Image (cartoon, rainbow, N blue to C red; front, side, top):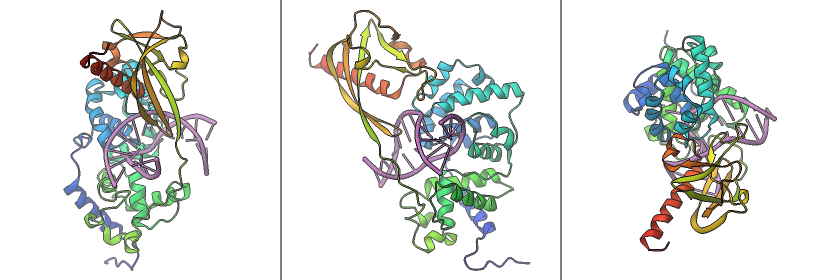
Length: 348
DNA sequence: AAATCGGGGTC
DNA sequence: GACCCAGATTT
């Protein structure tokens, strides 16, 4: 019996075949695609949460060299871990990674199914499905930003992509389409399509292996989908940071463990924290956006009499091994640059 | 259901 | 600037 598709009806078998053929030919050579070690797949998936491939690449190899297996990760000092993660963002990922590593050591083996994976801190529906399918060949469909966009176009989903109802519909569609014999490959193919062809703006439909099945394209609506609600506009704040040096050391304070963001990261003092510091000169300014706030940061050099309460001197040479916020790193770079400029021009 | 969490590439 | 990324967790 040959299946005869009616017009407008989804054709999962054909979509699977075309998508996989396309993927085998066009997939990018990414470091986490070179083996199926669950540990390495897991690390890659955590790093890739809300983070572009290009941003992850420089971190991935370095991180694995430093923490080559679950044991090493479980035993690492937290400051080492945060230092290795500094700049990637969403630092609760690093903290949860280590909690999970400790759980796995306790378990005695890497969790081998979706529900066991899902219990690890930092592992939600997406990551559990990704690791289960890619590392263990289990038939779980992933739903990430890429898949949601691709499927919203394929199925002409007109509801808000963030809404629970729409996510649920798209998830059901992903499960129907999933190639249950090659779930890992299929999931990666769908995500790869979203990342390289079915782009948020101006999708490259001429390169798409399933364009003939795409309802949005049939209607000429591929550029209008997916639909998403408006976002709150970013607010803006000023910040004045001080670079206070003494004998190769710089004055820092450390965010408390309970801090909602950048917990335990080291920061430069703000002008308001040290009203008695004597500002000697102006190093420059830059802007930095954190989630929904844009900071306009001015950097000054300053001097203090003695070490203020709650602050510590950190050797410049030790900063690599310590979690330092990106704002502080930018400020230090600006400071170093302005110092070099004033030396060249002969200004003290 | 909505808010929160980083940072950067890209248009 | 706005958008968005191989999301998870808390409120």
